[in-house]
Structure formats: C-alpha cells, structure tokens
Image 1 (spheres, rainbow, N blue to C red):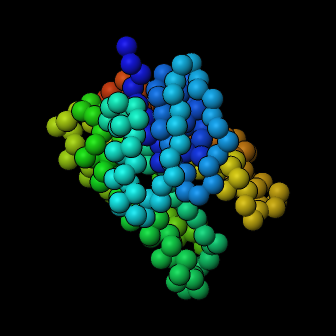
Image 2 (cartoon, rainbow, N blue to C red):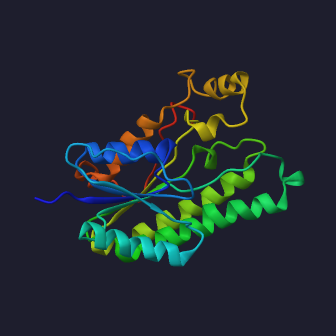
Length: 240
C-alpha cells in the first residue's frame, strides 16, 4: 500500500524540519519547501520519500507550480498540507513600528499564507488534513509583537472559515499555536537572559522543543485526530 503524502511549506528548519521528520516517521512521504538555501539532503525514514522544493509563497504562481510538481513527482495530490512558512521582524511598539517591516509581515504571513491555504483547499485529497502553524501570541498579548501577532490572528480566521467550507469533503482544518520554541529563529538576536525570560513565562520554566510541536502536527495529520476540526491547538507549556 502506497504511503500517504504530506506537503510541508517552510520545512527546512525549526518546527517545519521537525514536522518533516515526524511525518516521515509516521509513514508519510513528505514534500517540503524552502525559500533560498536548500537544506542538507534528508535521508528517507522508514521507507518514506522526502523531497525539497524551492518556493516563495508570496508568488501564487510558484505555489501553484509546487502543487503540480509534487503531484507529478509523487503520483498523487497531498493528503496533508502543513502551512508553516512565515517570517518575523525586529519587534517594536505600534507607534514606532517600521512600516516596511509591517508590510513584509503582511506579505508573507498573511498574503503568502492565503496563497498556500487557497491552493491547499483546491488540491488536498478528500478526507485529508490542512494544518496551519500560528502562535500563542494571538492570545498572549506581548508588547512589541502586536504586528506579528496580528498577521497570525488573520491566518487563524482563514483556517476556521476553511473548516466550515471544506467539511463536506471530509477535510479537517486545524491550527497549531506554539509558545516560545527553541529554534534558530527564536534565538536570533536574543542573549541568554532573554531566552530565560521567555522560559519563565511557562510554569515549567523552559521553552518548547521543535519536536514537541511536531508531535502535535503529526497527530493532527493522522486518523487519530478524526474528530478534531476547526481548532487551534496550543502546545505552549501552560503559557496560556
């Protein structure tokens, strides 16, 4: 019996790379995207095929092209699409926030995410799953992070509406909203004191691991979550 197929947007590092690994371990063949620098070649796990594709999600033509390429290369449309690709920019209060940086956030985290979700809705197999990676910061207001959180809040609205739109095809749409997770992106620009401040936000006094978030993504991609739909699951160590 052929493996099911997952397509992970933003799967070259951090949470996305952990999701690629976990889905492959779970028996999926996995296609994933990266923006500019191809990651080190990933070995297949448990007989799974893993292939990377260069995609800029802000260009809808590239998103269309990767869905077509993946279907041709793997012989089927994806059973699961993970919308993880996104960016952050230097934080700052709304009053002083750099306008160009805000536009970058909107262009990638909202317009780009829309492109991915739109074509996921058109291409994912009946009975499949669409999973969007958002953030606990939508519900945990933090100074300086309002513009970033706002783009993710809009992303969550798209996910919840899509669940109502796609339920007739048996497709489950959910979001995963982690708290601070120990990735290269999280640590960028932070000293150890800043990392510890983030850790102290959880009653467990640590930040999460990419693998812990990937476990939630893999669960939502699996039949074990057959009655979980239209939800925002928050692996955040009790932060919210």
